Image 1 (cartoon, one colour):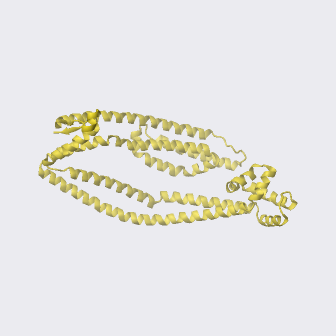
Image 2 (cartoon, rainbow, N blue to C red):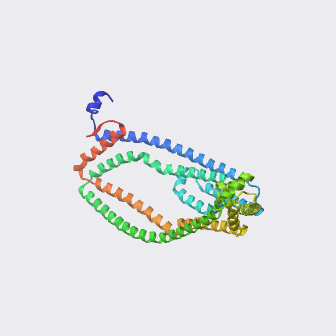
Image 3 (cartoon, one colour):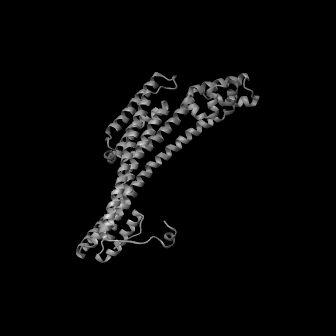
Length: 394
């Protein structure tokens, strides 16, 4: 823009309504070509995401256990869940249509069904093959992001739709006053029906939210139990933290180092080993191999006396059960009839909001021929934004 243009503004360009339509159709074609390019890119991203999932699942199938010192029963459990999870991923991929835009309408439902059916085998795999399972999860997340972009792609033509709506409003404004009044009455009745439904939805939300709150209270209670179990295990281990550090300085073994750095995780991973180590510490205290004052040794021996492998396993299992209960209850809430119903009516409510907005926009556009000048101003403004020129429609 020149210096004088910046001071006085661009010169207004006056065009006829026919010329405005011609310009709009030209700009629309250009934008739609851009949308087609975006669709092509999304299609390429879709294929790449699918390939990433297949590669990740193959890596999971071939992955070897880093810890070979586990029982045959644990290996069988791992293999069974690995096969089950890989099958569920395969079913998801086979259910998706090759064209992402054909697959998009049902993807969310298919993904939710997959997540529900694959939750247990995935959780088990994280204990054995955490890295490979996480790679599959990340690749599935990338696929979901591509579908989110597909939903958002519709926004690329929002400006075109605005001007197109203005042309429709202008054509509608030229219709007879009787036709306009009839349509206004129809729209008003639709809006009243929608408002009545929105009031009913609001009442349903209150009832469903109350029921969900009861379910959430169970989760909070389970979280409290989990916190208490974790606290009990931490308190039991904390009283020997000094001994663990001394033992590590003396022996330099991995378990005592893990007990110094992450005592709860170390105990959950190897409760039998921790029990043996505590027993060995008890012997060291009796022989004086670990330097402590007599009074302190007596206190530590007294604390160690009631602790054995069985008591440690019980505490670890209590924490594991509490943690599993929290996860189970959270899953139950997400898949409960109340949660699904609330999600459904919230989705319906969002749709009604959009419908109200569209009906109000149409109602506002129902103007007699005397409002044609105002609508032409809207078209001129929209075309100015699309073309970068200062346009006035005559």
